[in-house]
Length: 176
Length: 186
Image (cartoon, rainbow over all chains, first blue to last red; front, top):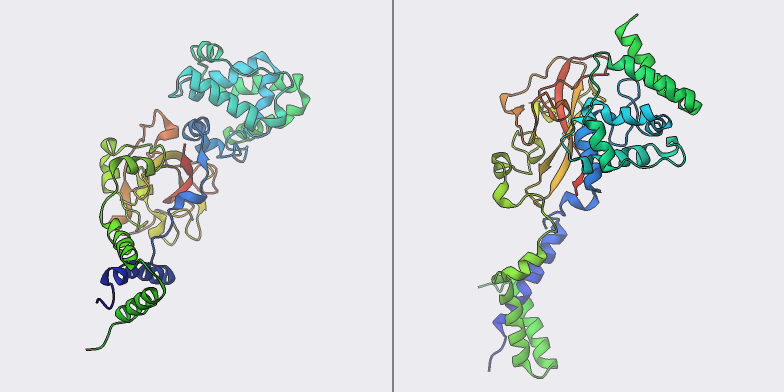
């Protein structure tokens, strides 16, 4: 007659060893992934192409780079303003298909723009994006053109006056 | 010869079981199955199911950097988050992988890329931010890195690490670079 089953005591070894490891905190730590947000593709495109300067949440300290959060939607107050956002060289030349760029612009304008988007604004369509990026802004004085667009936007939507903050700061950097 | 702890434990457990239960042969076989099972790798089908959902980078397409990347020492150029960093690591200069050393301030602008974590095979979005306001950090040569996964030339400035990103800070002097995680690429 066998007095004990070696197999059973073998089975106890891993269990005991694992509990000892866990107690000592030697068990492999959970990967960092758990707590981190998963970034959807459209937001990923924004981060890779724009977020470094415009800020992860669209806030950039507005004087160095224009804030998008709470103000980018104002550009939809005028047709020229709506076109301007897409004709900006870094948008028009983005390394994205027009379909992806349309999704990204709608994310930027409607999500970051929030309350600044005029009521009844329609989202950008792929066809509209494709047409606009075919005629990117070409003027040397981009700041001057922006200033002109912003003036018209503020006239149409007085609440957009904050957009001038960037233009004023830019003028101060360049000097009179 | 002294009796080992495991032997004593095993004997106590076995004797208690033996004294209280019938069909001891079944228990023995179940024990054997439990002990032996982990020694066999699972079938491939099961392993595919268990794999982390959509891995952004299949092994076949790994870059040279990704094949050599490690996840233990953030003060080395081959630490996985440094897949596209050009400059001195702030971790070698009194700062950290996402903190600036005393006396410097983070640039409000940065460039953003993705790196693959070898621990879980997923891609993460990383913001490369420069710390500015003091002369370049005098760190050992091993802290001065220049890697370029998915980096672009300066004609795509938002994806270039050849630019000193110290704009909008009190001083434009470059000191070192950080690599903070923003999130997991979807």
